[in-house]
Image (cartoon, rainbow, N blue to C red):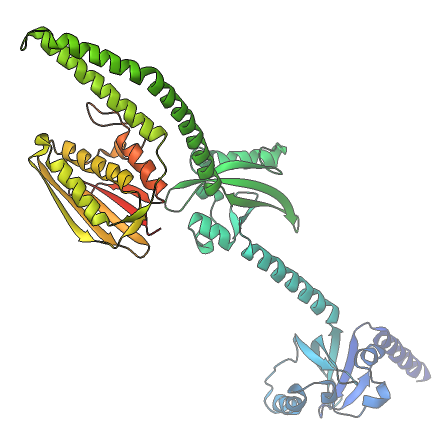
Length: 483
């Protein structure tokens, strides 16, 4: 019997040493929620000595509202067997002796000692884990705020090329929402041939490490949702998240820069053209005038109505056409700077139409001018060249027989002038080239009329646009600012 008592005592001591050495807090309560056991780890967690809590209600270790609810929950369980936390674990909040609270994981087990029902709670401090999660969450929120507020597009893909992140700037660039692209292959943002080549390139890099763009930046083309393309600078970085390879692309829209570069190249070309035109005018125009005068003298000595007299007349006509070309070339290459004065555009358009009506070759062309706009600052001489050119183009497109309608109306920032005809319109393949110098759809034309009109309108800080309605004809729209 003594041996049995000794074994029991040894067994109890062993279990006591296990409980006392446990890292997690262990608390035993009875069916009335009174504390019976409170191990050293629980003392460290809650700041109470065991002697301070034994015999007291366990709810002193709980903040509101759990403090007030616990006894009711325990009684309900004892009466109905309805479990809320017993037999499982969950994250709760504990209350220390000093009143501070902290996060913990509580698992509760039930046991019987004879006729007595006991509950054992194992409490694990989650303070460090929660702090780490909060730091990670704060870090993630901070970086997400940085990414979402970035002016440049930022796209993250996995090692198979599928999009994982797509910031608001990328949405604005490509016209897709994040939901539309996440999970899809990034090559939807690329025009051909890059669309078809990207997967093979990425696979080759993953297999061999051979870089083509990763780690560096270069200029490429992007493809918007609507199918249009645009220039952009792409730099790609590589990272690893939890051992999984990711690629981050930063995209900067180069549309404005490319437009400026094209404008500078165009201006440089125009400057060279202006120099050439000035030389031609000096070297050719005066000799042409002398040749024309000589031919007129010779022609005047020939009998009227003869073949030779007709040839001389044709030569003079061709020289005059060449002179007009020189004038057009000089006007296009070196347009005069506008000398703005208050101009009523309705009156200016009407007077220009009156000049055209005086041309016998255009007697079958009907020109209607309607609308009104307040005076604005402009150069009437230069704008008359523009309007005369547009109306002459319309008349020639209708082969001298048709109707031209010119509307003038005020806008919020200036004036809008629309010149419309009922001619055949402009072929689709010619519309993009219509303002290109020396491009023409006429059998005899310099191809400088619309190009010069565009330069003169832009010199007034205005815009010019050509439209061809589906029902036929052509409309040229000019927008001029008030100042």
